[in-house]
Amino acid sequence: MANVNLGLTIWTIVLFALFAAVLSKFGWGPLLRAIEEREKGIRDAVEGAQKAHDEAQALVAQHKEALQQARREREELIKQAMAEAQQVRADLLAQAKADSEHLIQRAKEQIERDSRAALQQLRAQVADLAVTAAGKIVTSSLTPEAQRKLVEDFIAKLPSTAR
Image (cartoon, rainbow, N blue to C red; front, side, top):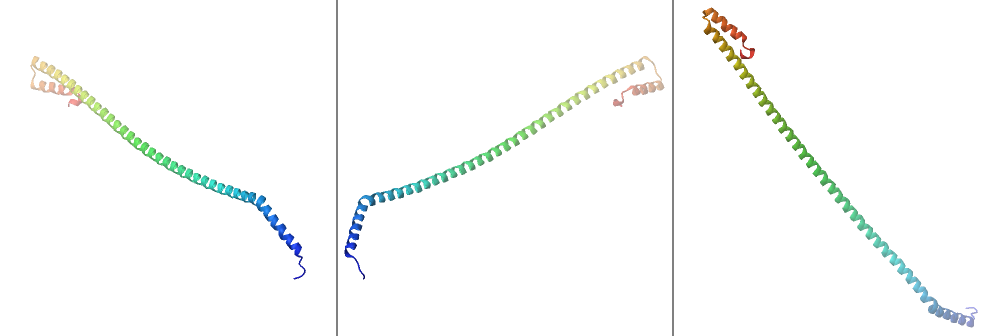
């Protein structure tokens, strides 16, 4: 070992110890507090970020559920609208069928009334012609030839529907 200066070494150790004591008394505490505060700030920031992440996840889940609920409600409304449309269609068809049957029935009744009236009128005309022909037969003494001619004339005068 070469030339080591004992005095310089002692002073270096004393100054180092003094510097370490001053640093531990005045610098080490504030330095540790600053590190602890920084560590706490980072921890709080991480916890805040985790909390925000959890809240965001909860909101996403709520929005997904609300969207699914809206889709279910939309499907239900569509089903209801389709059922109501089918019911309205069935009601309209039933009403149209009932109306057409009613009109057909009224037309049949009118045709029946008109037929009866025409038949009644025809019978009245036939009766008038028969009475007229009978009166002519009774008032005149006709030969069988004349009677046959009278009946043929009577038949010829009948409307075509009565023949």
